[in-house]
Length: 370
Image 1 (cartoon, one colour):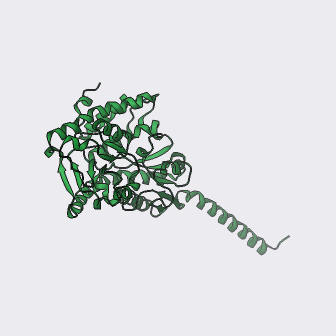
Image 2 (cartoon, rainbow, N blue to C red):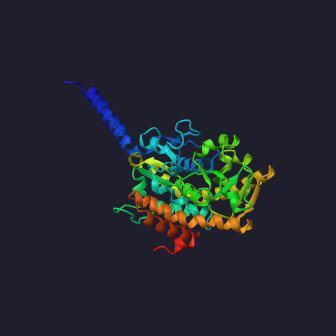
Image 3 (cartoon, helix red, strand yellow):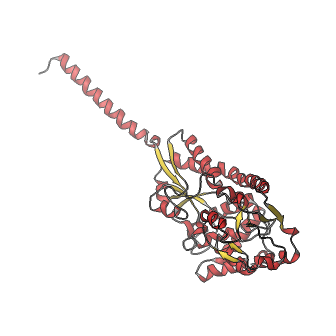
């Protein structure tokens, strides 16, 4: 039998060890939401692109701030880790945690996402961005009890991003002094909708991602492009375009910050909440950035000889020629989707209503659709 003094010492040691084990165990349970979360974020776009610089960078900063540094981001731009338009696939296969997804470039996978590229009588970045977010968050069932986002992006956790500013027609110098000048012009088209519209007005359509355009335009491979003025500096187009028609809207290019839904669900609840809060907070500011950039780019382009011509000042035959193609493009796109078994008519009516609610204007025959 141990002496009383040694027995007390042994008891104290065992109690201390038990308390230490209990504290360690309790610490792990209490700290589950405090463990560091490192997330890889990628884009094939340049770091100067407004989607990245004006949208994702402040979003990441805010998430880190809201989580007191618990979340850290590893950033990859300019195709370092994934190229345009493979970002969505990289998210879903786990190569990256988040990415700027550009669904317009992948109509085979996301055929209904081109809806924002339909031509409009009036819109701007804020109108287009709010309508796009409303579409992503809409609970209207379009087909088989599913919403737009469920039909197109069901595997993603979608964080809405503002659309670009409105698209214009810009050329490296060709001017539209008559309708015959428009016919035969070669323009890069960023979506099937622009291809449809180009066919309506006799424009030769060139299809390629924006990141490939600079070299092709520099070589004189085509005359110009449908493009957002505010987006020129992301690619250097402010040094190439010399003639731009403004005051007519050829749609808005959309994007979203995508994450695999299961990956998002695995994150601590406080991190999920921080991401949602950051999205709500940055959305309006990110929209305004496109508006501000447009003014800045126009000034830069004018300094090197660029000319901006308001649509209303063009010869009447040019205006009529450009306008005539707009109305048919809406119905042509709806029919394209319907032919593929998708709810094209329901979608364009929903987009019309959301656009008008946000303050935009659509062609008159579209307003009359029931």
